[in-house]
Image (cartoon, rainbow, N blue to C red; front, side, top):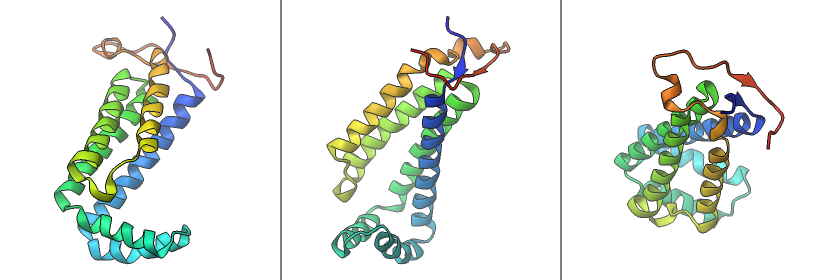
Length: 165
């Protein structure tokens, strides 16, 4: 069995996944708590990013069409993905991978079948999600299995910034 260790790729991807989840949670929370403020901020943010007026209007329509209960479901999915990424990087626990993968698959389902409309994920976005899950899966051997952490102290976690292949 390989000694659990934090590889650079696992560390980097987990940090990026947590930042993405936090930014999505913030956006969805703002959309539920202050939809008017969100409607004011979106055109400014879109213009700053160089979006066309047509795309900014589409973005506003998209955010307006999603109900508060759908936003709350999306927040739950993002919290699940954040917790998964946190468990993978902090505790090097494989359950984190499973939580993250379930969260990503629920996100695809929510965006395409529950919400739909302009929130539908295109093929490239779905392929990116599958690619991320596959990269995390390749690093499962560097994490503790769930039974390794029940009731006993896990083995020492080592830092490893080199890629072991």
